[in-house]
Amino acid sequence: MMLSGARGRLLPVSVPFRFFAAAACFHVLAWAALFMGAADAARFQGGLGWPLAALHLVTLGVLAMTAMGASLQLMPVATRQPVYSERGPAVLFWLYTPGVAAVALGMGLSWTRLLAVGAGLVALALAGFGVLLGRNLVGARGMPGVVAHGWVAIVSLFVTIVTALSLALAYTGWPLFDRGAALALHVTFAAYGFMGMLSLGLSYILVPMFALAHAPKERWVLASCALAAAALGLTATAALGVVPRFARLAALALAFAAAGVHLRLMAQARRRGMRRELGRSFKLVHWAWGFLVGSLAAALALELDAPVPGLATIFGILLIPGWLLTFLLGMLQRIAPFLASMHAVAGPGRPPSPSMLTDDRPLRLHYTCHLVALALLLAAALAGSGLHVAVAASVGTAGALAYAAFLAILGRRVAGRLGEPARLA
Image 1 (cartoon, one colour):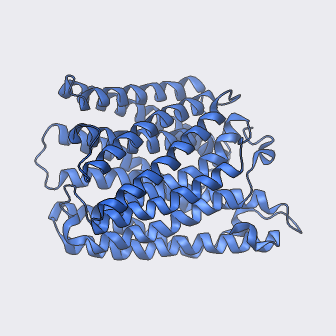
Image 2 (cartoon, one colour; image 1 turned 45 degrees about the horizontal axis):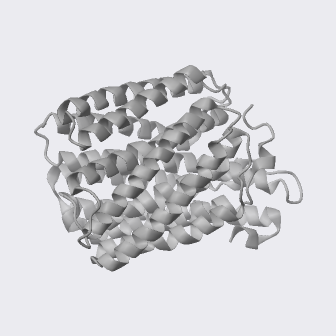
Image 3 (spheres, one colour; image 1 turned 90 degrees about the vertical axis):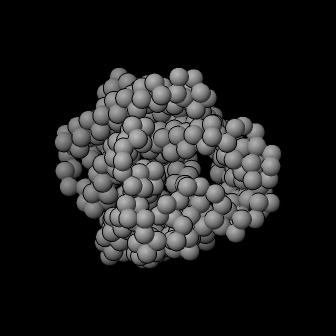
């Protein structure tokens, strides 16, 4: 099993949990920022303001923050190598967190100098994360498919950093690249490349682990990775102006194929696993998989100029809060208690199970609020209604607060088991 000897490769409990706690705070702030920019969000076409701040509070503050905490802990399990430095993740956290806050405030208040400072901190922290993750992948001794996804994610991360800096500097009059090309590369490589490939790769660890199933066959995992990487390469070709129409359509065809292989492997793991009932968290994961396919369908509709009102906004909703955020929130409901239980064995008494550390009541509220908020956002995009966005943001805020309560209760219970609350700070 992939968990063999994993406890010896665990970071201190405070390392992943500080990332998770920060992500929970930014989750609440993202919905609050969307509420502030509700009037402009339904037909958002870019530009500084609270809708852009809300988007980056999700992508940087929730998605990337959680990915950093989770992958720094889970990748060593897959590669059978320890993280080289326990101090490194802490340094990254203290660079990254104020950077995200500065980026969001700079965007929301249109303070370009603050945005530039925040972008520099975020870029430095993400580059450091890429280096730390890459060092762990070098010489990996297990799960080559997961490792391949990790390498594609790292390459995508550096494309994301460079294009993000170019877009941020454009507001100060010093862009690095043409804005259209930089924006196309940034959206694709940030969402589908960096976060997408990390999500797909970590799924090959998490879904079999929680379903008590064998890991998928490596040749199919590598095939899915190769298809996705080729799709990203063709998208880059299109963004740079080389046969753009053909390249985008070919990239979408490959992306559909990659998603199809991945979802088939996930369905096999679920079907063959010894644990059939995985609870509400995996209902969110199933919704996320549907949103993944929906985002690709929306991208195809955009390419074919389908006459759907608000289609570009619908694509963004399906991609970011739909697929990536829903998937992350569903998986984190499993990851956080699982890691907590592995650390809590050091405490007195019988080791607790993840379910013993989990309070399900806030998760029930979050599940309903999250899906209702997404439905309202899609309705807002179709109708062009700022009122729908405001209601969606209110419901989403309630769900985010409930999710933060789940993590806070989990942290308190683990601290009680360890008898050292400061270790979770």
